[in-house]
Image (cartoon, rainbow, N blue to C red; front, side, top):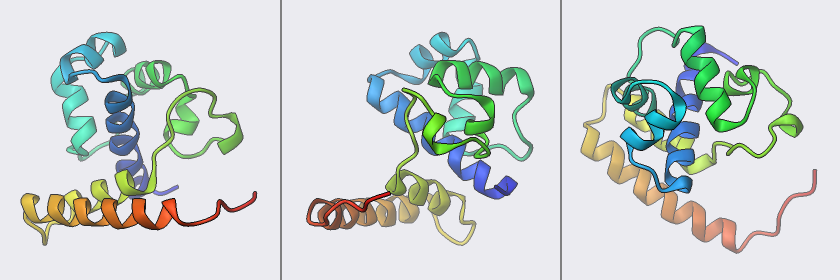
Length: 129
């Protein structure tokens, strides 16, 4: 997985985990053992270099996945109970990183995509693996 793909995956996974747990950024940061500003930057995808190994380890431990899975290199079947990034979250993260879009336009497009995705997914039979 490329660094760009990882930069989209990490924010999506962090955001989804925090939403599922119903935690504020500060509460999630306390659970992770990293600072709230760092967690906020990771969730927004606002990082120009990869987080350091200590931060990745703490984040992976909180998500209950391996660092390799967090970085997109692990086996999908071995993710364990941690949350997986879903397509609407990945699309939103990618739109927010697009320098050609204003933040509010990216969020509006993401919301429209999420609604359409959920409608189509609700009416689609699940694919077999």
